[in-house]
Amino acid sequence: MKIAVYPGSFDPITNGHLDIIERAAKLFDKIVVAVIRNPEKTPSFSLEDRLKMLKRSVARFHNVNVDSFDRLLVEYARKKKARAIVRGLRAVSDFDYEFQMALTNRRMAPEVETIFLMTDYRYSYLSSSFVKQIAGLGGDISGLVPAPVADRLKKILRKEQ
Picture 1 (cartoon, rainbow, N blue to C red):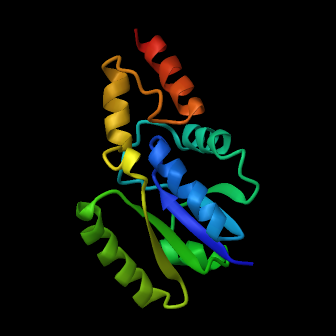
Picture 2 (cartoon, one colour):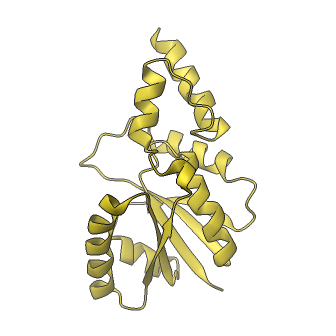
């Protein structure tokens, strides 16, 4: 079975992330979408919220699972018996960082390949930060995020008003 891990903070998941997941799901037998628990960062959404939104957003894919981790990515990939790490690229600016990370991961775990997928041009500008900023200012985020994320953001914003 060809297994891949797609890691990220997913704070929140966007349609750009979903595009990468959908395309990776066609390439691998199983995709593990793994939320990174990083104690050095303060996410806008709790880990529980991010996992719930992800699970609802990927429910239509039979070969996609959602999980979280708080160790080295390559250790997590080995634990999941993954042969690949999937990374999405929006622009050339993403490549420098991702290339360094891929080389470092390869040094630690040469048996785990990093696979880069370019996001669809419709989402090349999109980031979780932009989504949160647009939603926070009352903008329309439909078409930018899956419905479960839009619903959650609306509930949060209603509570804040």
